[in-house]
Length: 187
Ligand code: DGI
Ligand code: FE
Ligand code: FE
Ligand code: FE
Image (cartoon, rainbow, N blue to C red; front, side, top):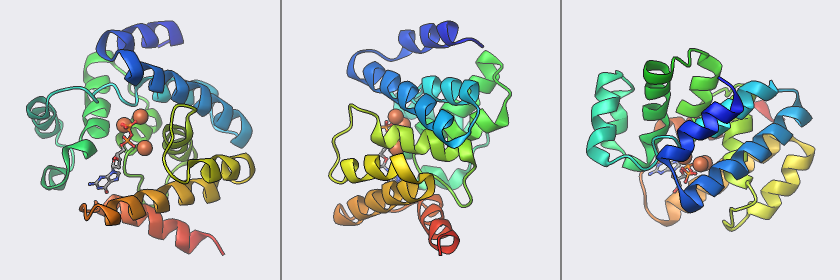
C-alpha cells in the first residue's frame, strides 16, 4: 500500500489531535528508520496505521481480540493495551497487510516486548518522542534518540514503567519483559 492511500484510510478513522499525533509519528519514524537503518517504507506504513484502532469502543476491541485470537491475557489488563493488537488483526484482515514485521511493530507499539526488532524499536520510540508529546523525561529520551536507539527505547520503557508504578497501574508482562531484555543486552 502507498502512503497516500494509507493516510486516506487512517484519516477517515482518526481525526483532530490524534491524527496530528499519527503524522508526528510518521515523520519521526522515517527519520529514525533512516538514521538506524530500518526499512523506510515499512516504518512509514507501520507509523501511519499504529493507532488505527485507538478510538474504537472497548466492546468492539474486545470482540476483535477474541476473533483474532490475540493473547487472551490482554483482556485482564487495561483496555489501553488492546488497540495495537486489534489494529494488527484488522489491517491483515481488511486491508491485506501481510508483512508480519509491520504488523508486529503495530501489535507491540504500546507495550514493547522482549528482544524487539529494529522496526519495533523505531515505532515504539517514534510514538513516544514525536514532536506533539510532552511527558516528563521526553526531552532526555529525544536526546538519547540522536545517539543510541537502544538507550532511547530503554529510557522510554523505563519512564513508562515508572509512570505506571506511580499510578499503581498493572504492568503487562510484555512491558517488563521489554525492560528486562534491555537490561540484559546493555553492558
Ligand atoms: O496510543 P498512544 O497514546 O499514542 O500511545 P501508546 O499506544 O503507547 O499508549 C500509551 C499508554 O499505554 C500510556 O498511558 C501507558 C500505557 N501503557 C503502556 N504499557 C502499559 C500501559 N498501561 C498499563 N496498564 N500497563 C502496561 O504495561
Ligand atoms: Fe497507541
Ligand atoms: Fe507508546
Ligand atoms: Fe500513538
